Length: 189
Image (cartoon, rainbow, N blue to C red; front, side, top):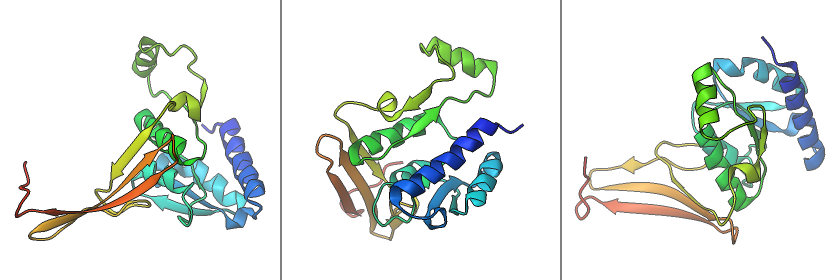
């Protein structure tokens, strides 16, 4: 069953983004997880003329990439976990951007859990400041190559890591490339 309002909102959001960026819809790159649950949304995105980048994982980094210069991603759209939405909102508070989210429930147990945590309005549209506020520090290290971070590269004697650290108070973004020497620092399993 198709939620017509949701799909109209997606089309309207794409059109508004194109107006804001002063480009045609065809110039926009919309990123979305390659999941069967997104088939209707993918068709709507295609109907606007916008390009699509489908990813297998890394939805938090794709949200962040949508506001990073030169990432090639203009918007991220999709459904996913609430913790990932909060992580993405925290990063967006540090670097600018916007996010909207709504809790979607699969069963009565999930609704009960939400109510037990104090959520009263099950249909609320959460804005950026609802999801993350205050003096926020965000950090992430790539495990596999993604839209924002390089994954861990391991050789016989060392590992290379790529991390990002952001702070909302200053808007500072730091990329940290680490080299971890296994001759000195032993791996613990």
